[in-house]
Image (cartoon, helix red, strand yellow):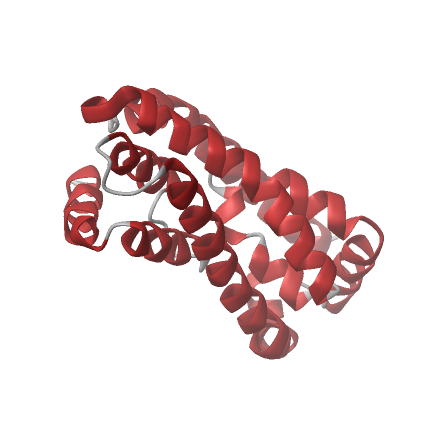
Length: 201
């Protein structure tokens, strides 16, 4: 059902060419889970049909993704921190843990942003904590762009090579997505267990 919804969105974006690709990536990078594993191969397919060029498809993915990342970063920077400080205790996030995250992004933010842009699922949401932690905006933009570039190129190229079968890219990666989801759920479960145990102690 979810895949059907994704494909319906792609059908809606199709007439807009590279603007549709850019908008799809903007949505994905603004923490709305429209998979780039669908949007970018679709851009590659459009390039294979001559609707747009391959370069336009890659740049549309890059610039759309960067725009969505900036939006998510801004929400985190100018709204997320206040919400966490006020309501973080209800989701087991303490002020100390926010300070630890701040130090992490201050010391390792560049590599964190770069590497997570290469990971399915996580890449969609990294802009929000980067903004909450107050990571330097210029560095955030630079390393986001670099981290997104291999992803944009490879998935656009896959769609370009597959042509009419571009949607197979998503099917091949579906099992990998499930592994990422299981790992994330396990990490969240461990975090909740750890926090509750400390609270009881």
